[in-house]
Every structure is written in structure tokens, then in C-alpha cells.
Length: 553
Image (cartoon, rainbow, N blue to C red):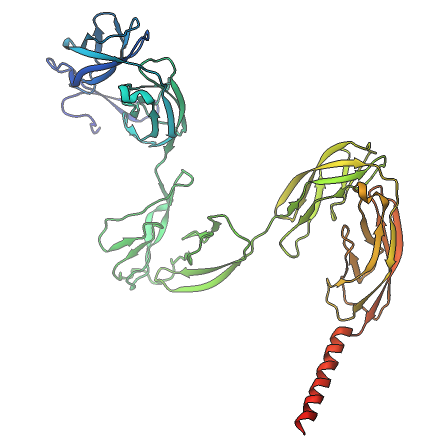
């Protein structure tokens, strides 16, 4: 049995298409004696002194039957299109009239249209929102809401517009009103529709692309249209065996129900019973499931049924403490705090470097730094630039070939913290390097034995090089030892492990860009206590003794 989709005053034909789907074709026969109807007023306006100018009608022609095809004819020195657009065959400068006839199936109506002329100096422009949405299952001739605007300074004089779409199978547009409608079954889209808008003089049309997104309906899936609920609890939540998904990424689903005694959360689809229900199961928890909720926050959300945690906004430095509540069907709940750490990506500060000329394997002296806000992250460096090499652990970049003084170039340096990778293009210049580095100053230092790992040890050595004025710089290295480390670029000495009684003789090597080295021994003495703190402590004891003596007199 086939159910008709046509009305009572139509002719219906039924067939099965190539996909096995029932299709109805409804035709609306013309009713004899029903001529097209002229509405509005029988006037028009026309751009002056322009061959082929279009009449801007103050009238509209409507067929008695929506499916009727209207044909047009016009008398005099004018032309009318199949859509009813009247244009001039020659330039017109004065007002006049034309007779327009609209015909359907032998029934016709003729009206005399009075037109005036105006000066058309401006051109139309299309602006605003050039996107639109339409449901995938929209019927033929469904209006698609658009939000673009068309402007023209001449509209105050009576100018108007016609709207046209480039050839396509799915959409059409009203010639005079610009109303966009479907004209066939839609695919998945999106559709890029070329819209052309012309004013009366027709010479400088405006063109834009309207992007129409096809919206697909939500889909019920899962294992069926069933659910279970805990007995004996008013407000108990339905545990669905179904799922609801939407093929359109970013759509917000809103849920409703008209079933008495049940309530649905519009944003989540969680259905609850208003009254307690009777049990039909031997074990009330046998088919129970869990619901997941997060306390209100701006950055994260969680799947109501699957507990999948996702980001929903840009994040700060973190960490975030998220209050998670898990409920079963009878709404018993447990709450815990989840701590989410946020990884901060490495950051480049500066993008230039200098390097010594005429030296193979010369080191880049960076004017940039690379830092990571996350304590404990290990940075690993790499480069894909030809004829460059990088020490992965330190970021020291060297040249494979000798470079010429005065030259410039670039290399791409990438750094990763294991989670995020950042790449920066570094611009370098080449300078003449004639001098060698020299280590001078005081080659001794002192540190307290109880100093924690990472404590800075104050040093007073100095490194000089006559080429520093040209951009030369230094790298600092210590011979292998278990207790101390030094900054490759800044030469800051720090502890890296618990220390013995010392002293420690540290072999320090300093190299410039061309890798010429200077080596000296730094002697680090380990003291049992901090002199400054000891003096403060002794002063405090003496003060207390003095105050005690004063109180006795």
C-alpha cells in the first residue's frame, strides 16, 4: 500500500526508483480561466541613457496555480526574458509606457506599465554573512534563510536589483526578491553558490560566493530504543541502550519529551522519572550504569555516559582541579578531584645569531634563548637545514662548512618538550674571528655542604675575547664530575648532587664561535655552614644573654 503525498486536486503518478524507493510525482493542472495576477502597482523605474537597462518593477506577477508556468511578451522597443525581466533595446532618457502580457495555458492578462527614468551612478555591493544552512531532508522549494545584504547609493532614486545563481542542480533564487530556495534533493554539501546581483543599468554587477551548509539530522543508534531505570527512586535516571549522535561537528543538541511523568535535561538528554517505579528485575543493580558530571568550569567537559574528558576552550597554565561526580541510576553518587596538568610549549625569545668566518664546525652564538615554563621538562633540539648540525641535548648549532665573513643565512631550529614541538627560523650573520678566549679573575669559589641540588655557586672568574665587539660569544663546559654542572651559554655554576668535604678541582673549558678553547681549574671549597648565617645566629645568642643580664638589675 502506498500513501499519497499529493493533494486532492492534482494528478499523481507513482513509481519505484533505482534505489527501490517509492517516488510520487504530483502535477498541478492549470485551471481554465485562471489568468496570472498583476499585483502592486503598474509602474517601473529605469536607469537613463543605458542600452539594455532593466526595468525595476513596482508590480509582481503571480500565477493562480503555483505550478503554472507563466510566459511573457512585451510591445514596443523592449525585450522581456522568460523570467519576466523587461529591458530596453536602446538608451532611454524620458518617461514612457510599455504593454506587458502574462499568459498561462491560453489565459492572459495585459497591463500598461508606466515607467520613469533616473540617473544610475552607483554600482551594487554584496556584504554581510555569506553563509547559509539548510536541512538535508528539506523539501523542494524550501526557503533557505540568508543574511547577506545588497547596497547601492541609487536605491534612493528608485534603483533595484535582480539576483541570479550560476548554473547548479540544487538551488534557485528569486529574480527580483533574492529569496534562495531548494529545487532538488540535496547531497551532503557544502554548496558554493555563485551569486550575481545587477542593478538597473546592468553594467557592473556584484558577485559573491554563498556557502550553503547541509545540516544532517541527529541519529539514534546503539543497541535499540530501550532503556532501564532503578526501581523505587523518584527522580531515578534512565540508563539508555541507545545513543544519539549528530553527523555535523559542532552542532548543539537540545532534547525534549512530551511523555507525562518524565523529565529530560535539554542539554544532555538525561531522562528521569518523576515518580518511583516498580522493579521487574531480581537484582536492581544488575543492569545499572554510571553517569559522569563535572562541576562548572570553563575549560573541560565530560561525556555524560562514557566519562570521556575533553577540552572545550583555550587553557591557561594550569593545573586544573576538576570535581568529578559519578552517579548510578538511583542517583547514589561519589565525588573525587581530578588534577589535569597543562603542558606549556617551549618558547623562543629572539631569532638571530652570529658565527665565526672561515671555520668548519664553527658554533652559532645565539642572540635568542629557548625556555620552557614546565619544571622538569627535557628539551630536545633538531634541525633539517642543510650543512647545519645541532647537539640535541643543548641546542648548540654548528656549521658543516666554513662561511665567508659578511654573509648572512638562516636555519630552522626545532625544539620539543616531548609533547609540543616549536620551530623557529633563525637569521645569522658571519663575522671575522681573530682572537682566542682567555679565562682570568678569581678561580676559586665556596659552597655550603648542605646546599640543595640546583644551588648557584658564586664564581668570580672572567672570560675575555677581543672579538666580542664583532659578536663573538662563549660556551662553557666542565670535565666529568658528579657534583657540579655549568650553563652552556651563561657559565653559571650549580650543584647537581650532595657533596662531600671537598675541595673540588673543576676543569673549566671555554670556547668561542670558532671553537678555540681556553682551560682553567676552578677550586670549589665546601664549608660545613654558612658564615653569614652563623654570624646571625651568634648575634642572636649574645643579644639574648644581654637581655637576661639587664633583667636581673
